[in-house]
Image 1: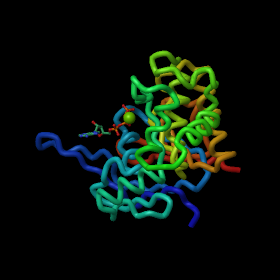
Image 2: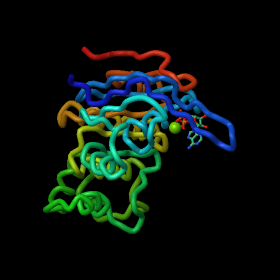
Image 3: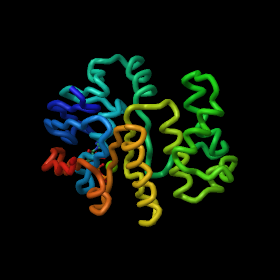
Image 4: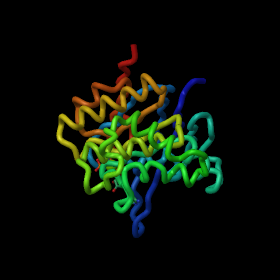
Length: 229
Ligand SMILES: Nc1ncnc2c1ncn2[C@@H]1O[C@H](COP(=O)(O)OP(=O)(O)OP(=O)(O)O)[C@@H](O)[C@H]1O
Ligand SMILES: [Mg+2]
């Protein structure tokens, strides 16, 4: 088995004031290692729910999740946190950087949590992978463009050398040219660093750049498109 991510018969029900929402219904999905995959679908179709469950940020109501072979559905909260930190880097639409830390300090933060050795050297290597110019390393987030902030967020996601990067609309706040540069960067991470990258996108022109697309509709995967050679 060489799948980085596997969902088997995964359902998620939310209950709000007695109303049950079936955010995911019996979803099966396999994403091989070192693949660039995308999740598309209308608003409310369950994309974020599925990504959060893959990444162990949320628990399924039913079903099995394997990430790098780890059975996430069986783990205790403490085990889940530890595996998540080691195996997954998260990237968000709004970057989620710490405003009073510089670019390089933002990247060092997860390394300090993981009690890694030379945090400065590793952070520099990650900023280089994310192609943030050296002249921007000391800038705080509000002194950076959106595209530069997303590069810092991607460098931060790479800090602990995860197998998987999960990104919820990483280009959602960027113009199309900058968005395409971020997509090219994520693609290179699959090709050169052998990361498995999963993005949510609303853009058909971005989805066709990925090797595998899961099209969601009403909490189910309506269709998967495989563009792997
Ligand atoms: N924490 C929650 N509690 C209750 N219902 C929720 C919760 N999170 C999501 N939902 C519901 O689950 C469904 C799927 O939501 P989800 O956020 O996964 O959609 P999405 O495809 O990511 O949409 P968008 O494109 O707007 O981000 C929606 O009907 C939403 O209202
Ligand atoms: Mg969403």
